[in-house]
Length: 397
Image (tube, rainbow, N blue to C red; front, side):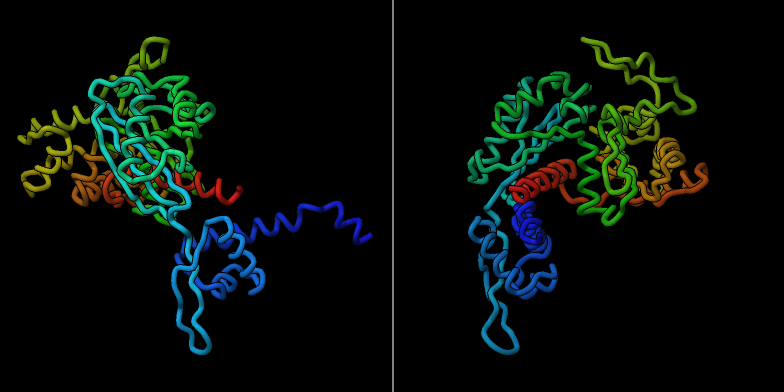
């Protein structure tokens, strides 16, 4: 009876090996080099099983001995670490004026980052291909070694198809681009909303670490929202969750005829966008005596001006608070992260004002903080999302 029962479960030993291999590899990726004994302790594996697991991972070219740890008694213990070059990923941010691409190894260390101007190049496939190839050459990594490619773009990405449904800034990105990119690069490609990627970066490396429920409000060229609930991005059925620019707010006209029809993008006149867009903030700043090439420049000047800049910061905060409060009374996220060029320029001076303004109109006011991800948070989020894909592929290989 016992032997017959085991015959019916020929995959059990293999499954256990896969579980053990994954546990050890995840631990090494998270913690860095460890001894066999430490791996056994932290995973609950016996010494024999830990040794067998490491031998399999070595055979697959995923881990190697990277040093020794001195012990109190007996010989030094070998330290095992993940081979950083066993896999690479690419993360990209594509905007109307610039394309950025980064190559990272399996540990998440960025080994090359490049930027390029589209220079009138409208074809998304050619644009992405050129950026990825340029980044790979800079990193001295063959394109064939990429295990994950994630592209951040403004606009709505349909979670069912992976395609951009519409984007004001990138009108050439439309249905069919996702498949064309995958065909061109000969690997799976993920397109993700840029603000969602910024939220991924803030949860992993910034102001929302270890926070399962939060929203990220992005104010730059436009205004966008990312929603994280239960530790997962909430994209909505069609990918439109977070299109906060359409939010009706007091004192401004409603967005007029927002329906998307073939050959025409939905209107973004009216709504919150008309109060907190880059153009709106720049115009507001001009009225307060501050000028700059961008809205972020204007806000930077207001912060530097001290008392003289407070009226502008107060007005920007009160406008932004309308959107933040509207989101919070529905979702009650507890934490709001302000990100994007304008919010970064405003820093603590703007964040504090938004928190105070929201508290006046929201029954359960959230904590409001400034994003802390260094460099380009969208690009960092794209790399992190690509790493998740690559590691999952390795774990299940």
